[in-house]
Image (cartoon, rainbow, N blue to C red; front, top):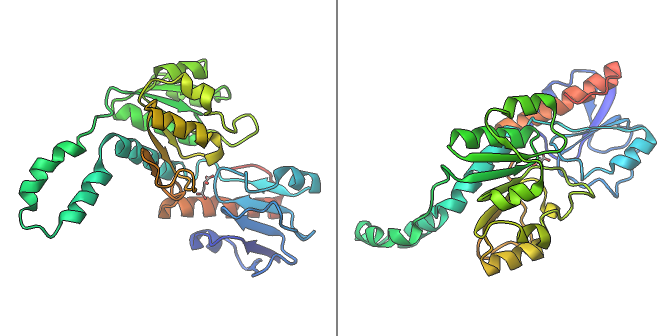
Length: 302
Ligand code: MLT
């Protein structure tokens, strides 16, 4: 009998895969496995019985991976399982940054009780005019599961896509080779693109990679999208670039006191993977990884 503990509510379909050999416990005590989504685990004392942690998501920066490795605890993530959910929100972010959909909806909501709202709307709509994304250049930093899906979708929408990824797999490179320009340097992305979206993990080397120096190399009026991790962007430098007009819009999935409510910033509360499908896919993959490890000793991300 194996015991597991969920640090976050996790899609119930995932847990159904555990059979009678598994018992869900309300505490970590005596547990063999921990399932986690976004809970920060750095200060947690894990019982010595824990041999595996599975993160229902791609990033593992909420888990002390190095300490786990030292203690012989295996850490899994679920690469690709929520990629479609994030991709769809990135596309929505690009459209929201280009068309004033939010402003238009808010205006109708405010004026909804006026008899002549139809006439007012005709006058008002000029204020909400936007631009199209077809024909624009999109730079994608990181062409993993999410970045490559964004690349394909944006190509389908008629955008010219530039991708940068020094660690690109041969398969991914081949699949994307006919549709995108492979940029050899980040500077090429910065200097060419109208929209730039980041899809890299948060590491020492990527922390605040979008900083004053990088922003200075970008085109005037660039739109930046960040659905990966907040600390990839130096938000003070970003706000200065927004205020000067260098950056037209910043779309981020990470709400905090610095960005919330600032003019030109569209913020969602970490919703990228919050779809029924992504939550289920991640939970199912996480549970399968835990089972395969505990029962067969297999250590491989799906
Ligand atoms: C991820 O790393 O895949 C996301 O942060 C998942 C999530 O929203 O939990």
